[in-house]
Length: 506
Image 1 (tube, one colour):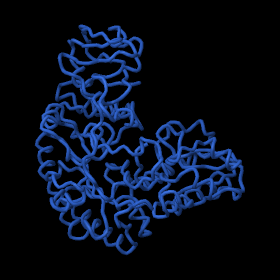
Image 2 (tube, helix red, strand yellow; image 1 turned 180 degrees about the vertical axis):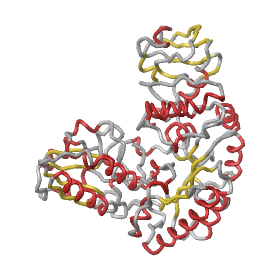
Image 3 (cartoon, helix red, strand yellow; image 1 turned 60 degrees about the vertical axis):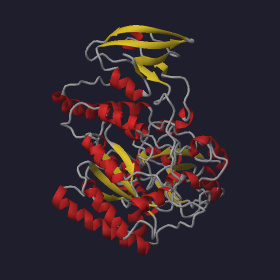
Image 4 (cartoon, helix red, strand yellow; image 1 turned 30 degrees about the vertical axis):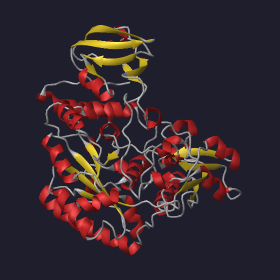
């Protein structure tokens, strides 16, 4: 695993950002201001890659203190010190370690005293770390003291719209600023303590991803189901004073926080630029298990939202030279509108929130197309009902370029309900029920987004092998058209998806 050794020289920070972008192919949407003094933003990239797709289920309650070491890389600092898998690193220089962020922050010194626990016995080690020397250690979990649970009761929470009986990790409702820093999880800031603020000031964990929904305090408290929720504008201002940037989202509910409320929220947040680096506007997701009378947007209502946001984008480009507020992909599909050009996403700051994923998919396809070779592939490609026109268009081009014979099938989501239309929330049983006895090809291609972070399980715990057995065809998993030609074993690390919305927890 490639690691990065932080430097505390302000002059060197921009060099580290450039280095990290090269090593991790990292775009500008993930980093803090480049000329800022040393922060952990670069370490965040390395840690995010190590725990890509991490499931927080195992760390959902506090256990033993310190971090459990899972792997030691030979020849690195940890190996030289005699650390072993199974050891717990409790503290560095008398600083108790709460998570990998603490480890990276306090472990950047050249002289250290480590408190170790091994087989129930504690002892200390003196460590002399050479400049630039890598630790070469991996921990079992990114947080050591338990994940922070959400203290809100949002009526529109997707986790609360999950059916019973699914795997436990799908019901985890985290609201942990460390997961926001490490993985880009959205948080509400409602459970921050003064100790948390002190830590944010010391370590300057930037950027954070904040669910705002409304800047009207009373309305936001109503939406969150939390009468004690603090003023989010005051909190964002405080973060800005600490040098911490934020990416925000507004989940819109018809008739609740749109119209004049959306106007106020966008204007309030834009006034906090550059602390507020982006504003995503996302339609509420509704499953058939929703019990609070919330409905999805109609096409006419969606067009009003799109027009409102586009007008603000044009205004912000004049003043800030970026759009600042961005629509998630669903709006364009609902309104049958063309997708914005890649440059209009200003570096795709909220790609993992479904903002620009469809455009990124098209850009990847354009790059991939020139390198494709002729093939005799005959396949059926599955997607959700919303991205169907886009996937069909691209696969028609794929067939024209390669000679492949491809049929694209949109599968209706019966598990969560037909209002859920993205590919990433299709289940194995929906695919099997929709296609049993109807596949005219020997190969079925499923979207990578249907599967968990490891690419093994669908949301209803079906494997590729389960689906192959049920349908009697070869199943491949792909994120781009060119990958349709490869066997399933080739897709373990694919991260781009046919997906116009957000996943629940993997």
